[in-house]
Length: 233
Length: 295
Image (tube, rainbow over the protein chains, first blue to last red):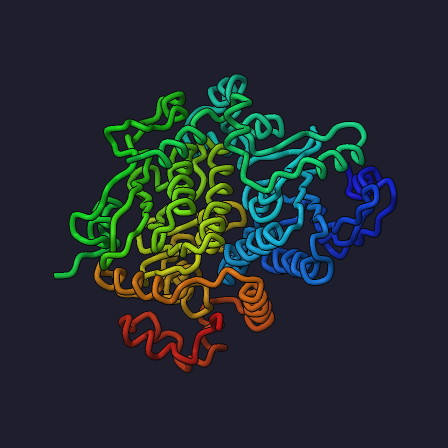
């Protein structure tokens, strides 16, 4: 779904979201609440400029609109794969964005993210995965790597990986797998405006993903292992 | 004879950095906390899943520590591996040690359990920031053979401070990944000097992506760790704004540079080629006034 349809449907009481290059910024109305909108489009490759622009937008919301909820609209094909961006320290720019999001959360901003097209590996870590509520449209593509490439790197046949992916959510692409693993909180279907309103009403600022992964049967060990570390003599 | 950090494995690094006999391991190999996903794929597992965690001391200060083992799957992060690191950080939020020390050596997410690994890296990032927000400094050390890449390269920069050696490498996409995606003209992964000028310790120190650079010895790393702990941490909006300014200036100043050497020249190094030849002390001294950093 294109970002314009996503904002039209999510902010039925009105919105002002602009696109500049691959960056989306603006605000939308959700009931009586105004929320900040920050995102990317065109399956953006997140390089240093784009990561910095998103961080600037987050800092701007913190400065100008204390406690205003922030909605990230995620569409990224991952981090930009360029020598130049690596040389400039792209990991540092991504981390900066993640830190800005964390700072916003700790200053009382609810953080919601919606993967409406693509979320691939590194591009997803710095914003979408930092959210209190991380949602996706059911048809959204979420992955680290596709199975053919994974087969090449791991030297496990694609047939075997495909077969295993039928019963395990642990490595294969797909929003449903991330939901089962606790990496996504929910899939938004139908009335997006209602989904957003509902999400804003059950903000949980703690990291609840490993608990969800356990309860949904997709990631059985993470929560257990953390608890064992906490209980170790 | 000083011991090399680079050539040591995770356990030897812990033994070399912490006070003698102070280390107490949590979920040691005997606990057999292994990855079930590797077993499903008929891949060999490690009884510690490639990361050693526990508690010890440096100069008598209580330290929580996690050390990734590059020798097991290149230090890649899977479900159990990641959860062990998260456990250390969450325990730090509860128990308030003097610092958490993360000895990172990793290519990032373990592809055999890619989704679990990606989520785990994200949980590590949030847990690092939770520890910092709770007032516990998190210090990252990078000086191993495999460097620190992938999502863990982002996680490293969420920490309070990063200490590297010249041999250490830090980035997001590794050179091989970029070469595979864009071709050898974009990035020749076999050109070791080029890789070093792009992600190596000295370059990272000069552009302000790491806070300290040390020679490759346990003693030097230990000294730097103590200094970082003494310097404390600044998790504040003000510090983030300063970082924002630094990163903004970096793009403006160096955004059109084609090579690390162009950046160093721009930083005022008359003879950038000489940097590779300098020993650590000489380099750190010469770098004063010729690097960018916070504060």
